[in-house]
Image 1 (cartoon, one colour):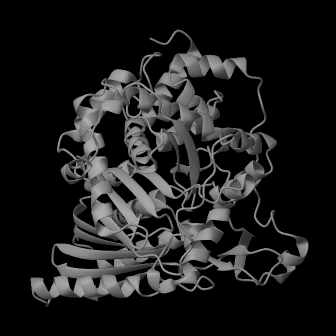
Image 2 (cartoon, rainbow, N blue to C red):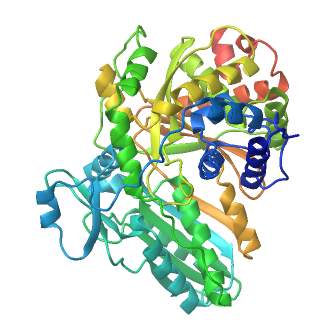
Length: 537
């Protein structure tokens, strides 16, 4: 039990963040269901209570006892000041802004990269994401329209366009007024087969309809009323304005606003944190000698090789599912709890093991998606593009899959203070264009579970996501069932069909081996398929 007022306060905060009773001072944050997004809420709420530590600290010292002791041992520092509107603009750029623009600031490095890849070939729909949700829901359409309008008013990202050439640097412009996002179509008169055909056609048309980055909106919603009790919602957006957590946040908030308006209830104020705060954090990281030294030291002495393939004008993405046992999620949670490691670390261990096989070396380099959200009270509630693909270097060595998971967590904990240094800038700093040919991505959008409390039931989800990475290993926990899913997305031109199928098989077998024998030497895991073993003999 807590021994001091500070420990009692932090234990209460941990319990609130994780939606559980107050915890003991030696309970492990990740054992209790903590993750990187929940860490933002923990860090920010603790700071408001006068207990200051970082997300990196949560990874390295994840108990109430450790965090209170760490915070007490550090000298107090003044609170970071929020960035004011237009503060990052040169004076002559401010004078060029029109009356309809209420804020403007430079683009992040990743925003520029996404715009580049998307503009290079809009027909490939790279970084143009489309999600089609079949939902059991009977809305009042007028109220839903108003909820969509309020959603735009609450979030700067939905009122943002890009101007790459009119100012001294490329800028994103936040307009005072947004555009209508929601289009409503009634298809209830169609048969079920005709509805499915209509929905599929709408999905394909939206995928083929590029965004004009200089005009609003850069997100579109289309609601198709299927019958008295269900709708199809098509959500399409330019990835440069929002990340994966943000699109789920927007979906959840849309229906939260709808129910509040329907019942005449008040809604929470919009987040105080703004996307410009993240831009300032990224720029500070780019100027940090410690961050530069970290990335230089991390890859010092690692043999360099030519990139896998030259850039192409077109990238066709093929997504293959990975076989995941039905009880994998429960078994991984139990394994994570038994060894006080995040579930994510075990999945990253699987990825590292497959990368070692594909590269033919225990010295592995790959990239991992990390969140750079501000560690503020509402940093998990602001909408924008906060992710970065950070490169990892891992020497797998001997040991078990549990040891690989420990290695994965240690690597992530070490890089967290420097996670906002953009991948493109790291490549340039190191002179290593081959970094980032493969990507590991783990998501658990647990906020979507709140849709059930609003009476919203998701019947089916059809996604389209395409990136510029030749190989992406995706792992995600279903927010409703907590079921683990996995897929491998590959560049069609970089990998042939047999190779794609084999790679998906490697992930499935590595995951199965981890679950069967987590303490057995990972070198004993046989990842090759029967066809390859036959060829080998």
